[in-house]
Length: 369
Image (cartoon, rainbow, N blue to C red; front, side, top):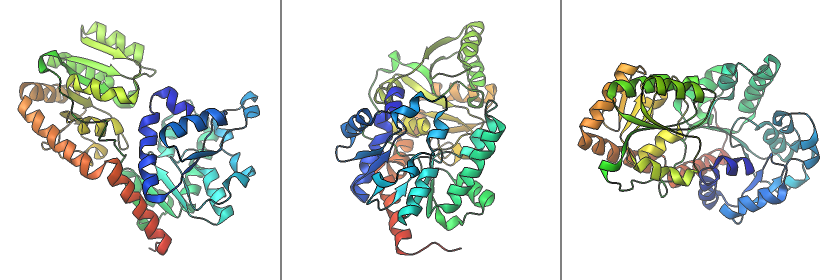
């Protein structure tokens, strides 16, 4: 909870659990923070009737080991989990104690995978080979032990099924939930708006260099919200290209809709993605969106109807930018359709209902292949 608070995303993360609790009842959380009182206080500010049942022992914070090893501690003290009816992970990362707790109490384990840990760790050049292999084995183990799996995009379902032999009927696709009451179109005078907004990490897979080169070709302005190892390099590139650019390190999630309302369009040009929440949030705000034409974006956007899918190269991106800047009515119509899709398929309420149906289905009878 503290980590979410510090990152400015605690509202984003807990708003869905609050909605989900209306469908499945009382929630308890495992946290890897080391202050039970602080973690509980933060949780109750958002979900008053929820509680924290396990936090990292404070003494462990003094040991020279990283958070990965702390995740193995909860099963050594199962007493706080007495009375649990089901266990559900937030991500694959850190899900392994949930499997052990669920098996101890003979209750269902639901694996929720917003991203694929094995794919991410393989791309991490700094991760030790032994740690990579351990994480890949853990992902396989928790996937095979899960009674039900929830993934956020079709590619993840295919990957888990093919890679680990998971029965496809056990895997349900439910996209990232969006708070459509927070993310909605806000009125701003068009004359006062900047042109393009990018939100995300400044890392190589996000293809920021191509975005900046496209901005130069389009003679547009851009704001980039996010941090990462490429920040200084992108600042230097922006200066060399003489761009009208603003860099913002971070912003609390509730402030992002206002930032979106001050820009004419949103862009994301990643080489690969999962189910990018920031793209869904931009669509909820009726922003005209340009996205790289990769399968994960095509799962979200119907090209030419709810946004533009283009090759992730400067020329194609700049053409799309100019097209939307020169045709505001086209962008407005795309934005309207995009929000309708979010309301129907990604809202907190619709996603919580879908997830509750997953629980109901596997509690009645086991999935079979």
